Image (cartoon, rainbow over all chains, first blue to last red; front, side):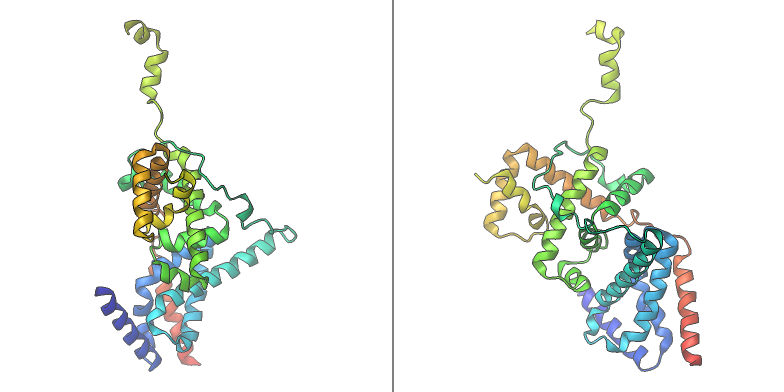
Length: 219
Length: 81
């Protein structure tokens, strides 16, 4: 319900913008600007480039808004523009860095494992986990290491919390492709984060007690 | 009995509430009896709580201000044209 009201307000803002009230552009992008930044950052992995991508996307949105036919899909459309600008900047940077490196193997589909290898239970941590800097870094790194086709789906669904339909619209892929990639992304990411979050079999204290002759003698 | 491989293949859909009732029941029955799959399921769930946290991809201080002043200059230059 709330969502429908928001979409209606947004459609009205678009209408006003197109009618010449240019300054409502600020209000139009405000609900999404943080999302734009995160999406760009996940592709470019540095602040300066991510901000540049978002700014360029603003020009794109500003210039082409009149061509948006489904006005209730501004969120998906805008994110798609951000995504494309970020990819363009990424390509440009890469060309500058390594002119001749072949990137043919970057989709990672060939090395897909069908069944997880890590089974250890994870510690009870989710609610406060993200408050720890090292946890945030580990998660960002692991996401960054996903092949691009998996990373973009994962970012939209499980970081930006878009629903399936919205994710499909941003990426312009079909449903089964999005679902398969999301599934693989989750499995790969869980696999790569497991060593960090797995419960140690025994605590350091327990192990120390086991090794220490004084404790050992008292058993 | 459904095999572990089948469970894992449907795990993502299951977590999104996107499986048939029949498959959901099969998965739930399996998870109750299989420690390994249950550990995979439980840790995937925990992972998604963490990755969904806004803090993971922090937006830098002043980002909004910089963006809106960029928008201001964009709007100003579009009017002068």
